[in-house]
Length: 158
Image (cartoon, rainbow, N blue to C red; front, side, top):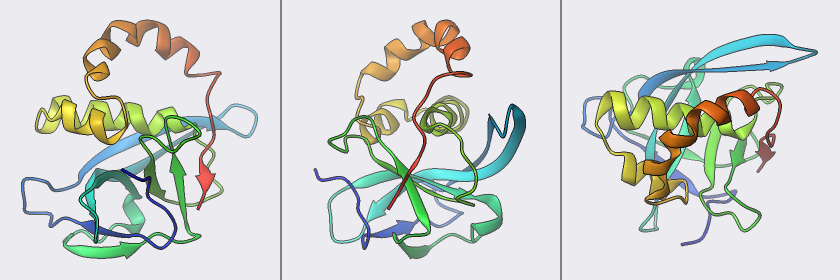
């Protein structure tokens, strides 16, 4: 499965279906420790023409609440990924002046999409390139939370 790239078309599901995007908050610090908090809609979007779903985050102000529309990945999008080979690549549409680390999004996906909404942890984990490793992630949560404030990789531009 190849990572999503510029030019790919994502199908944002209807807001009334079982695969609808859910709203969650991403929090981070930038600008010498200033705290930021923004709402995003997140979910798994089908990649048109490929048998693939990717994790997608759309800032609340840019999300079309009815869902059921297509978006093309272009220079206005950013992405995060598990490694340099593009495993687990996910897409983010937001103000590109925001500088949250990639893990802020993956943590929000696990928190908002797997436990609270519809218990689809394995599917979200697979989309992020981790498969069954999601189950072990909870064991490391206490340590990771402390390091997450200081360490991380920034988003990349498409």
